[in-house]
Image 1: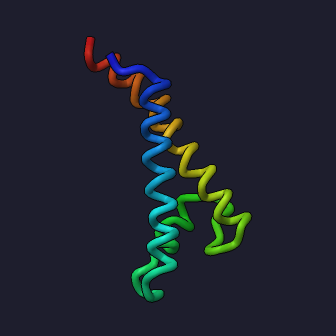
Image 2: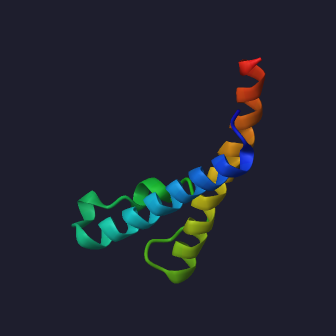
Length: 81
């Protein structure tokens, strides 16, 4: 049986690590390969390379993990019956 808290922590950590790796990747490659244009519409308040923007993006990425877990676990339990 899938539980909300372990799944929430797992998904949130995964999305946060992915977000940080994309930021680091964007610092290392030319503009054409940067991922910030993909993150901007998904993360309210995200701005490329501003402290506030990066923080809002990290909070948003972490929050999306919990959002997915809170929806997926009850739906999964319904279909597993």
